[in-house]
Image (cartoon, rainbow, N blue to C red; front, side, top):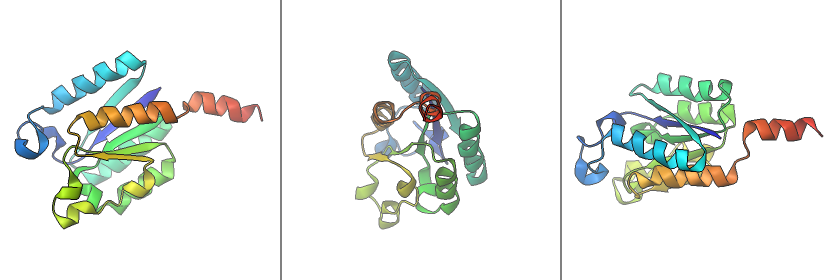
Length: 156
């Protein structure tokens, strides 16, 4: 299984930005943690981070063309504003999970709005960076790899 982990604005600043909300782990530590978790499960994880909305849209679309099986996305602040990311996720029809490190439900009102959620089959927030692992586990347990799915459909 191949999962693309997409991170939006300011996630490259993990460990520096508001550690009281986001913890002390750096972005590099996060990717190492996810890689180790995935290797134990026979999953390949690819990582992408951008502070630019259009670049995130491009990477979602590229995940489809690269044959990815699923997407884990932490859109950061774009969660609350980006119809473009919603449309991109819908357009590729890949299983997706939405992750937030902090408990967005306990924060400002505007952070409780998610445009992305309706394109995701799983959402986790407030579990720190372990939320990424939960999302990966959910997708691994509930997603048929595209190659297997295509073989099944071609036999019909």
